[in-house]
Amino acid sequence: MNRKKLISTIVVLFITIAIGFTAYHSNSAQGNIYLYGEMHAEPELVEREYDLWYQYYHEKGMRHLFLEDSYYGAEFLNIWMQSDSDELLEQLRKERIGSFGASSIYKEFYKKIKRECPETIFHGTDVGHQYDTTGERYLDYLEEKGQEESEKYKRAREVMKQGQEYHRDTDKDVYREKKMAENFIWEYEKLKGESVMGIYGGAHVELTQADYGTGLMDNMALQLREKYREKLVTEDLWDTPYGSDIQPKEAIEIKGKQYRASYVGDAITVIEGKYYSTVTIYKVKEGQEDFENMPMGEPISARDELKLDVNYGTVYALEFIGDGEYVGTRLFLTDTSAREDGSIMMREIQLDD
Image (cartoon, rainbow, N blue to C red; front, side, top):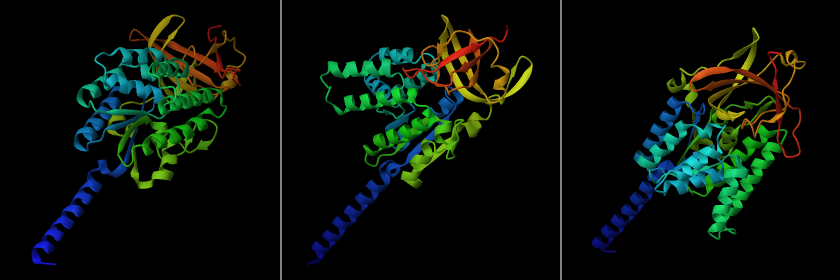
């Protein structure tokens, strides 16, 4: 081989190695998973999540944002991202009345992403909540496009079945964490090495076992860590300075007595025709015997009326805020078993009687 050929070969080899090295290190950090835990609908935390995504999007070239949402909910967000109007976004919010997803905080979050990070692709990895509204509407959308045999159609049907099973299952939290991990893996593996960011409730992200009142169990993040090891990076924003000023109660006062309680979350709901901008939900962890002989109201569906996912045989304290003012606290006791349709009924404890 002459000198020119040798030099040319070395140059080509060097360029090939350099390209390979660059590709290896520029592929959005090579398939890393950055998960952030939140207290749902807290403005400071949601703003921080937006800042993080903006940074990943513009500085690392990442495009895939995973959410605590259903597959079809995220698909509708992706369709909305290509739309000139907010009609689809508003429809999603209407179907989520009573849950955190209806919060105007998330509406503004998505609109900022559409404006500043327009190539974002959303991935929903939760079980199929709103299967009878958003889910059915998504199937109708695909049918109108003649896509009944598509992977999207089959996937939506599968996730809707997960939602139905979740609302029937006695070990619903165990089932949900398992499916959230499986759904995450299904979405992530399709990306073939791209890095992603995910936003979930803190209980799903902390690398500690979760306790939903039925014993310790591996949450979504722990199950993902088992598979992805060091690729998985988690941070609960609740434990950072962004969440330091948000302190949920650890006790609830009922008729002059203190009861240990654990914060469940906040919701937006309509009860008896009245709109409440915030309902803060606590699980009462002791003293249930104090309420068992009190008069009870008529049974209502936790899912249909209050849009709550609840445990069996549990007392919940709901603090209501309407028109920006505290309205009052009401107690509800859930049944010890579900009805045939999977719904769990709850009765208001009549404290004033």
